[in-house]
Image (cartoon, rainbow, N blue to C red; front, side):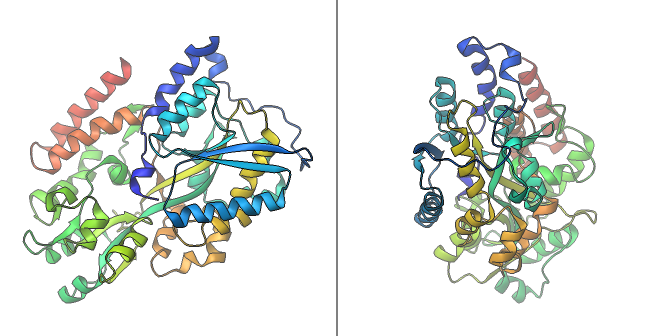
Length: 428
C-alpha cells in the first residue's frame, strides 16, 4: 500500500458527524449512540439462505489485488451461501464513503483508516462488533495499539486488517564506507547523518517534515500534540523535541526533504542514492527492491529518544455499516478476513503486515531481514490517530513546521502561531 493510500481523503469523515446529524431528522443523541446493537450472534450463527454482501475498499497493486481475491475465494468456499461483491473505490475514498453513508448506500463492510475512525464512531454509523465475537476469535492475538485504534469507551467498531510502523532504512554501502555503525539513539543518528552527508549530492537524512511522521517525536519530551481534541503542539516540550529535526537541516546541513533534491518521497530519495538514511514504512521495501535493485539496504528500529523507544503506526480495519440489513453475513466476512486463516493469506507476500502476532510469527515476518524491525515496533507504536479534529490540527502544524524546517522562521514562533490558528478554526 502506498503512503498516499494511508492518507487518502484526510478529513472527509470529520464532516460526516454534523452532516449525518442534519440528514434524515436524526437528533444528536441518535447520531452519537455507541450502545451495541442487540444481536443473536453471540454464538456461531449458521447462515443457510443465499445472501450477497458488498465489501468496499481502495485498490492496490496487482499482487495485493490477487491476494485479496484469493482470500475472498477462500471465504466463499467456506461459506457457500454468502457471495461477496468487491467494490473498489479508486479515488477520493473517504469522500465517496461519506456520500454513500449519508445517502444510505454504503457497503455492508468497508475499509476504515484509523485516522478517520474517531469521526465515524462519533457519527454513529458503525456497527459495534463485541457481541458478535466468539471465544475462538482470539482478540488478544491482535497487536494492542492497532486494535485500540478502533475502540471507544470499551466498544470495538472494527478489527485491523494490516498495518505498518516506521523503521530506519539505511544504505549499507554508505555506512560501511564511512565506518559508521547503525545508529540506535537519536544522538548517534544525528552524528551519523553529518558524517554521511556529501555536500548537496547525498544527505545523511531524507526527512519528511510532517506531523504524520513526527507525532511520536513531538511527544517524546512529555508534551502533547493534541489535548482534549484541541491543538497543544505549541508546548515548549514539543518544540524542544522537534527542534533537532529543524537543526539537522539548517545547522548541520545533513538533512533535506525529498522535493529539495527532485524526489517525490523518502523511498525514492533513498533509492536514488540522495539520502543515506530515511525513516519509512513497510511500503518502501517492495518499492526499493523493484525500482532500485542495486541499493544494498537494511532496516532497524527507529533510534531511541532519551532512552525511550518510539515510532508511528498506520493501520486500517474492516468495519460494518450500522445500516446494513445483512449483519450476520457481514460479521462472517470480517471474522474470516481478520481471523488467522484469512489474514495469513492476505499478508503472505509481505505487502501488508498482519495485525495478529501469531500470523506474523507463522509467516516469519518477525524474523525477516527487512521487516523484523517494522514488526518489532508494533507494541510501542503511536497510531496515527487522535480525535475528530486531527485533520485541522495537522494542516496547520504542517504548514508552519515546514516553514521552520526550511529556515523561514524560528520553530517556536511557527508552532505557537499554528496552534493558535488551529484552535481558532476548531472553536469556530
